[in-house]
Image 1 (cartoon, helix red, strand yellow):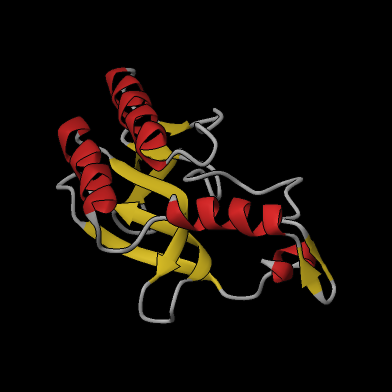
Image 2 (spheres, rainbow, N blue to C red; image 1 turned 30 degrees about the horizontal axis):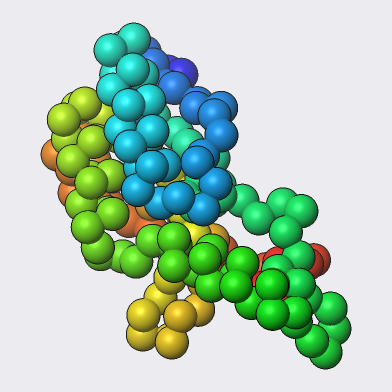
Length: 156
């Protein structure tokens, strides 16, 4: 990726190495997945990356194929338990989980962008598909919530 610097006439370009991580999370295991994020972030930084990008809903996992026992008008007991596990492993912002992610960015000296399932404690446990962005100093630079769920995501 190249980033422009200077004016339109005689502009110079600076190259920035970007790592796009294509890995699987440890499904519905927040702490184990964060351990993996820390390791992969450092590997990317060691290879020269300045920006490390992880997929949508990497923590605790994208729920593809999980119905959580839902059908219109009902949910099974097993589905309720699966959803409770999913919600328990979601990430609150701020939290010790976000502190660990920020520390990974700081320790590796990179910008880190990662998709998480965010559990909002203010709205009694609503889950959001959220993008978290950390700077190389470890600070949370911003978050973007996906506010309009699509298709079966509306059931959860």
